[in-house]
Length: 95
Image (cartoon, rainbow, N blue to C red):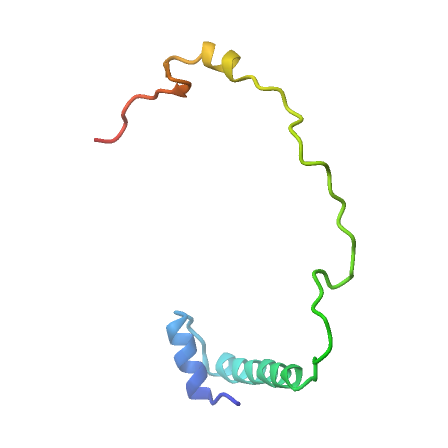
């Protein structure tokens, strides 16, 4: 699939891009190169190849899923201007 310059003009208009004639011609060539690359990539036979979670097959370091911070809720709510049922109350700003 190749794009014509009129296609690129329409795409530029939809994207609210203002391209002059030289930019339009250059963009048409670049987009067609990208589409050719996608066509070549889609033509590759990937049957029997398992997808990778990471392109470098790196192992991700994981830490234990446990709470490491202390709960300071009561201390913080003691100094809050207004609290009710464990929630901070703030004045109404918008009617």
